[in-house]
Length: 137
Image (cartoon, rainbow, N blue to C red; front, side):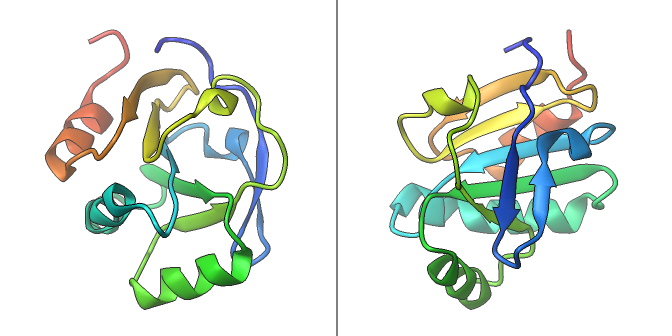
C-alpha cells in the first residue's frame, strides 16, 4: 500500500499488449485469478458489474492468469466476461511477483500508486468503496 506500481507488460486473450503504465489517469484493478478457483469464479459477477458501472476511461480491469490462452478465451466467452483477461507470460516485478494466493486484487489509483491489496474475494460494495476512496483518505 502506498508504493508506486511497477510497470509490466502482458498480452490479453486477443493478442493485444497491455502495459500497466497505459492505465495511468484511471483507477485500475489488477486481479490474479484462475478458471478453476471457486473464489475467483464467485468474484467474476462483481467484476462484470464494475465494468458496467464505470467507463473504460474511469476504470481499467486487468485479470491475469497463468493458464493457456485458448482456455482463458473460451472461459471468458462462456462466462460473459466484459473486462480484459490476460495471460501471465513472464515474471512480473514486485509486488506482483509476490502473489501466492488467488484471487489477489491490487487496487491502483489514477497516479499509479497502490491503494490496497486484497487477498480473497472482494465484494462489489467493497470494490466500489475502494475505487471511490482517494489516496490518503
